[in-house]
Image 1 (cartoon, helix red, strand yellow):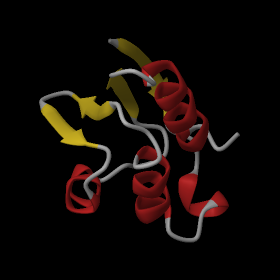
Image 2 (image 1 turned 120 degrees about the vertical axis):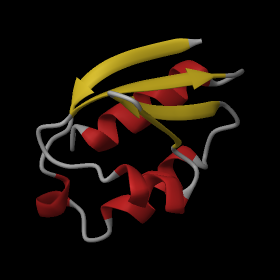
Image 3 (image 1 turned 135 degrees about the vertical axis):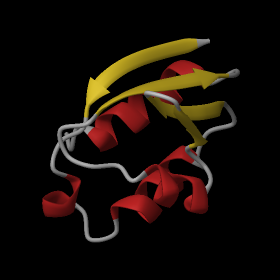
Length: 84
């Protein structure tokens, strides 16, 4: 299992549909990918979960990936959320 804590960049300025694009990115990997903040945790592959999580610029979140491609999955989701 790999995890990293990041601060989200301004997704609305760089992505037209940030929630669906995040889910699309996460779904490219076999690993289980979770996003958590304070007392909330959601599956990054669930559009309803991501929408309910309410990602916002400047928020600090933890990304957790577990599985055979966890390192690549973690990097991809982190890169997306940091708008790199």
